Image (cartoon, rainbow, N blue to C red):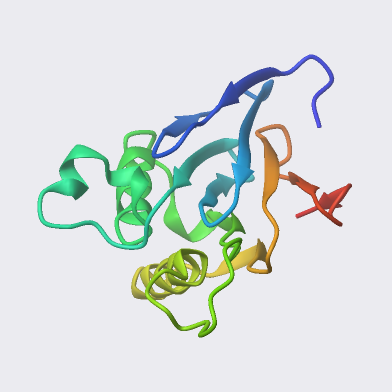
Length: 165
């Protein structure tokens, strides 16, 4: 991670795109939410989003495209196209998707973490993207710091101190 970094904190449904090597994008308290990143190691261009829910309802994708697992990747790719980014070089990573609330049946509609992960995986497959590294699922929240210097993600949280993706 960069020593003198400019830290950008993304809250629920927020996104960021840029190529300043001194930037670290942070997301805190990722329970069922997902932290999603795309990174071009050649140009050091990166994009990140704090995804909240699996699916956008009609019209929501225009209002808050980074908020939903089914719309975040097409949206971030469209933002990266403005930088003339080449999709084949992008490295996709994801963190979060925990089921922090326990239900008797794990397949319940309220298992937002699992649904977020499943929806993101389907969206990635539909776009011919592969999730190259991930820390997903489980029952505990986590936080992450995404460095534009090297594309690495530092994950912290219960049992995850020092995990680097």
